[in-house]
Amino acid sequence: MSKKRTYWILQILGWTLLIMFEYVPYVLEYGFQISEFYTALANILLGICLTHVYRLVIRKWNWSSLPLPRLALRVIGSVLLLGLIMAMINQPMDREMLEHNLLNQPLVFWSYYANWCKNLLAWILSYTVYHYVEQTRLASYEKIMLKMSMREAEAKVLRSQLNPHFTFNALNSIRALVFEDPSKAQLSITQLSNILRNSLLADRRKTVDLQEELRTVEDYLELEKVRYEDRLRYTIITNPQAIYWQVPPMMLQTLVENGIKHGVSKEMGGGFIEVKSAIINDLLVINILNSGNLGATESGGVGLKNTAERLSILYGKGATFRIFQMKEGVVCSEVKIPMLSEGVLLVGEESGTGN
Image (cartoon, rainbow, N blue to C red; front, side, top):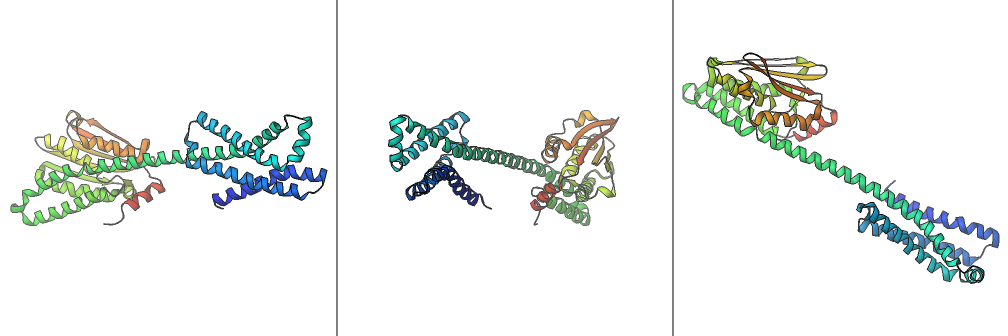
């Protein structure tokens, strides 16, 4: 049942029961009178009309968004005004009864007025509280959605910051091959094309399969071997059960790039990159080992900062990232990622549809 239909049912039923609660005892005591019956119907219609006007006013002027003291003043003022209207309209209809009672009870009108204010207060207070709670709930929902939109926009900015640096390094790796080894240059261009395609899709996808991310890493390392040749050695080891685990796109490539730039490239005789992944305690644990010392890698630049921020945005406190000196000459970048919930995965899949 819609809210609008529920509202009108409660309006009609509520005012009918309220007026009948006073009209039926009158009929039982004084007998049925057609004039009093019409008065009862008029009061039902009048109550519905006046309280509906109040509903329109509170919605138009958005009273429910006001601070509670200011809202309370408006509620009290509305009750007094509507109660006065009900009393003034009913006075002529009950003139004979009022004139008789006024002889013995000079304050009967104010008692009459107070009774209508009491009835109206119950309705107005109920509706105002409901509308206030509903407005508060919607405001909280909008804040959550705004926060999510801001975090998603921030995540897209962080992902886009990775691409220019990577593209520059990859093109440098291919340049020397164009004349020396055209066939290998063609293969490298294909690898670069695959990487760039994944890089472009990264702006539209929150997560990708680990195996897809590892293919990007392997293509990148093959391109880097063109530049470093035998000075670069690499191995990729992964748990078969982890290949479909969802990870942020281009994240591992960034860490590998950091290891080469601040580790392998600093070593006279070159160095190694080792990428290992395993599932431990329901977490995907990825370790990227590279030659070097932490003193040279701790200022790895925007890439490492972006990695930590992207993990925080996507997984909250469930994911961790650290870079540390495993032993002399070996630096380890460690990422721990939890399993994403089904809802987040669906969002990621919808974001990544289309080519």
